[in-house]
Image 1 (spheres, rainbow, N blue to C red):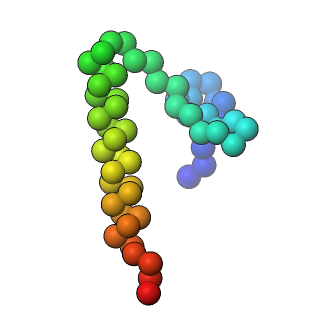
Image 2: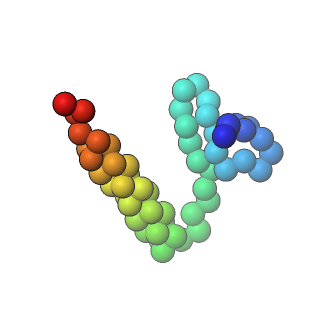
Amino acid sequence: MGLRSGAKGSMARFEDGVFSLNVQVQDAEERALLYRWTKEICLYRLHAYFERGTGK
């Protein structure tokens, strides 16, 4: 699945080697929720990475 960077209404952008999301945060509660989701995704990805091990 390709990323349609710069498409009208797109929430994602890849420009000059940098991936970013265009997310409007309305208040502190939404900011906290976005932070929690991002942290959970990162922890999940790190866990999956280290679960693979070194392959030896």
